[in-house]
Length: 191
Image (cartoon, rainbow, N blue to C red):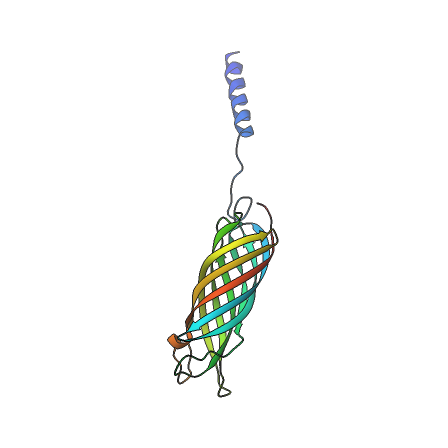
């Protein structure tokens, strides 16, 4: 009788503890970095070179993980030739991997950090010369949730261009600060 009186409460305690257990969090599962959205963007960018500026247009496609991490593909191209003072006029086209961090994306206004990393081509206006370049474009800004399916981003950053091999231009001449408007369309779920 003594054995049963000890075993019954132990069994009940073990049973009750399983009822109050919480779900386990995992990296790629519930409450982890599971797929939570898909977005496509149109970007409008102004790059500043000394007394001149160049207009860029591009976009990106990205998957959202954990409601705050973006991974995708982005592209951009100058619509006009940039004309830095005393340098050759040039145009730039590039594309690559887009990585982003959008903390507190469920708030109406929230921060946004992105980086585009990839290759591109440099075109000179006065010749048929083209050159392959490497581009790293980090940016930071704010994003506004206008509708559930539409977000407006305002960002600023600096485009770093490397591996250029054109006489008359250097990497620091082509690299520039920029301001960008980002129109994102898509959906996030699992808020």
